[in-house]
Image (cartoon, rainbow, N blue to C red):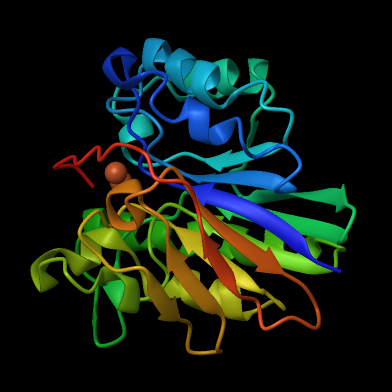
Length: 258
Ligand SMILES: [Fe+2]
Ligand SMILES: [Fe+2]
């Protein structure tokens, strides 16, 4: 039995690109069991932009599950952004999870935005000024919430959904100097603390697609500028080689932001 998901992040929608993803998305019913969105759904986190996301990804006839990204926090309108998405039937995760009953089994998705901090040997530490301690506390608390959510789900196939990267592999192509702002090793540890089948993230527009956690979990950067298509499709199942097939191409929306 197979569970099939479509995933994309960093669509950074506003009115000028409204409708660009929709034709490809409308091919999904019957082809996948869920659509996962890896944050940075908007450009500046306004309610108006969130309504564009709702129009683009709402009412598809396929469950849509999202986490927010840093851009979705920019205007301090997170409750309004989440409200607009949820009104359209989109599930927004932040330190929690959801289980979907699919024909191929129960799909569990645990999600958190995550945060920066860096990777082994080159990371921020809980030391010194209160601001640095607060930064690292945000990182560790976010990873702890992801770990708890992953371990709480009773399902056949478990997927971790974040905006920030859990491993440095999928940042290859980004300047080394900004790695600590693109992800943190604690998210990777959280993913490895549960029987996770696949970890999806975005944020690293200039990164690369494939990586693996220290515990061997497949990591995929599904940021739209990286996958250069409307979504990637993943087939997941107990006895599968967990192959991937490509999604449908959509006009290149190259953006300078992460
Ligand atoms: Fe981002
Ligand atoms: Fe982004």
